[in-house]
Length: 450
Image (tube, rainbow, N blue to C red; front, side):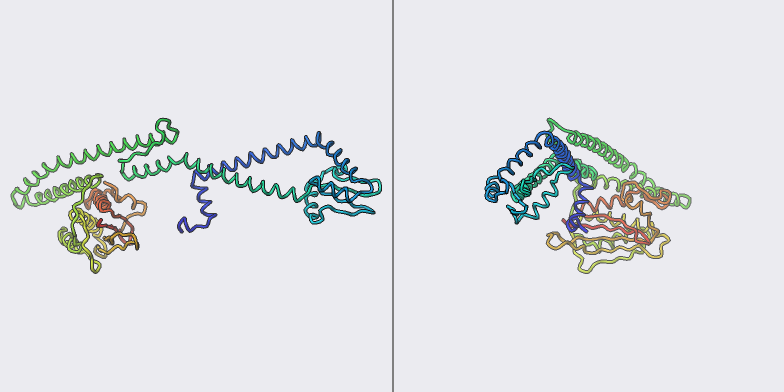
């Protein structure tokens, strides 16, 4: 399931677990709530102590004066005038007068009184008894007490949401260099060192700016080491070509006598392997260069596959499958020939005792509707040999990697074939994948004309 189709609570949980921004904002909110709760608790305790020590006598005296204004026996007219003048509610109960200033708010007043009732054995502060047996109870006008805090509460919530949004935007701005560092690390991992990680505010860098500068320095050092290795390989390969050519020429000039012929053939075979190795080294370094140029031309893959199979030693059996109406894509014929030769040679070397011959299939790779891209070409080569362990699959296309060095040495190969195939696929804007087909290994290459 994609991230856009996940339920909101799963997306929130994923963001909280994987996003540093969200975790920082959540920490900010928790800290703000904890500080607000601590402040309110402390202020409530402080006001309650101050109330008992200072304000309580004043309230007692004021309630006495209000009860005296209503009189004894209580006067409803005076009580109504008092209610109109002050934000209070009055309830009178007794043998002669039973009156309530706000009968519609009876339930609300009861809940308010229960929540704000004073505990202990002292008489209730807001209730008085008259000489003729009436009880006068004073309270705040609940309607006024509720409407105003509701508006304040919504305004406070809006301000809190606004502050949270501003905090998130600020945290996102502060952590924006992390996106640049991540993108730069991914570029460096693919061998692209042309664009360094941008350092924001280089005149006054912070910790993230120093980290970006350090990674840029590391990337520059790695690039220099890779360039030195590439230059060394190219120099050695070029220097070896001339003596190798002379050695092959001198070997071919040896007399074809019975005592010399076996050694001559073995030497020519070894020289041929060295020639192919040097060719693969030179080609891999050219393709690994960021300025690798392809000479594209229309290529009939069915004809090219047949030519490559016919050129393999021993005229091996290879099962070939081609899609109907196969187009002639614009590809680099020399590089594609090299790719096919290496894939088929690798499949044949691992099919010595296999029950079936290797298979090669060339199919049309469809594209998504509306993408504007031309259909690609998928080349699949499979053998029916033992395959490789699953943990070694990610390393097979690395240079000079051999899962079983002794076995590879016995059957030939130094670990450059699949690496070179991956470079050819990437140079054509395609993909290169490996998987165990049970039995055997399957290699899939997707190529694009442009």
